Length: 128
Image (cartoon, rainbow, N blue to C red):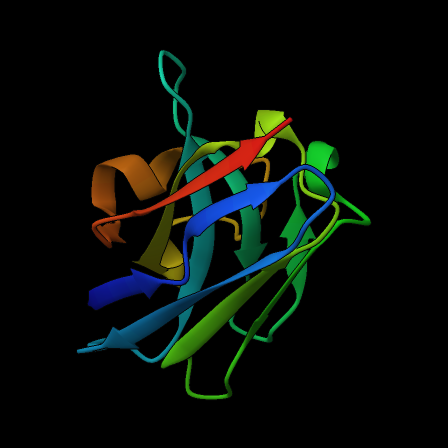
């Protein structure tokens, strides 16, 4: 799967940004899609995971602030980020994995790192 993120940028705390991911080249019938982020000096972490039925699972730190959705064919996924905080500063990645490889949940993102396809990332910077 080829993935291309867009929409990153710089914003003051409390502001909003919308990230988009254009996906193509699907081989299998169902995929688990995800948004991840990596801050400097930290490990990459899952932010929002979308299963093949469109259900979204969020990491606790972004619940009530971030909303993700996917088009029916998964060709576009969006991450709407509101009430941004300086600690949200990171490079944000879109990823996809054949859904049989894992339970599609924010608690089981390990297989993405080993078997998933990744975009190149987009930078989000939130200032005080």
